Image (cartoon, one colour):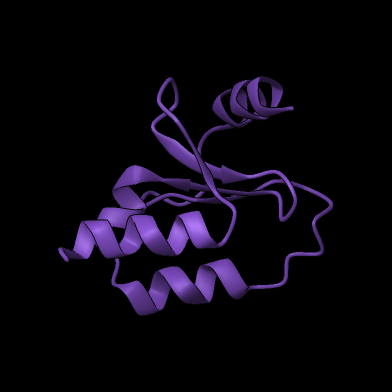
Length: 82
């Protein structure tokens, strides 16, 4: 199994879905959004740590290589995901 397949399996098992329009993985319950680039560029251990991280689930938490996306981008993604 390749690393990308393993990461996909980790995300699937944690309840993340993929948004092809936004190129992100998201989990509505935990309110986390992980960019494809972040998932690809970080190891499985980092990905698992991010998934386990307790964010309180009140606001969407973004995991992008560049840090937080600009506010207009965040609002657009949040609106599209509900």
